[in-house]
Length: 156
Image (cartoon, rainbow, N blue to C red; front, top):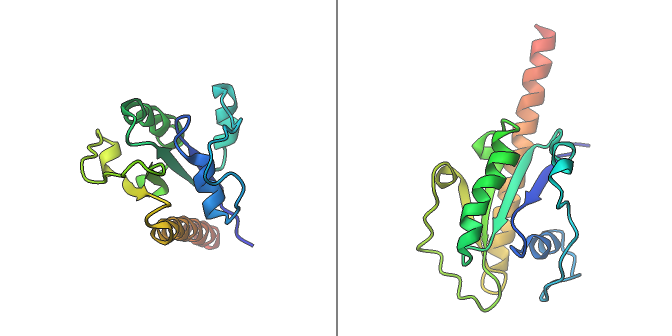
């Protein structure tokens, strides 16, 4: 059985728990904000990052501080692990009733070259689920390709 380790990170109150519950088809916590303890201490991050295959960075695009903060998350969790940009997914999570303007989101380099999806569980939940599934499939493909290269190097 193939296992993949994908980290879901981002600023406080960005929607990480809501999206995790939605993708895992858990109904706990959907609709109301309930802060999750998570790993708030940077000293834990190296252990958390070890052997990860991908990173999903979730942020609230309506909070200007989040746009700056996700640069730090990208640096720590993607660049420091030497992950490919294709192993990273940016999710602009629009909270219920926010309107969810998806047009005017300008991200700084290098974030502007990453795959970005807009998440609005009120308006397009199945589109959101489909985008996550595409991302997870791409991670599985990368893992399989890496294993095949490793096997071929052992054989030859």
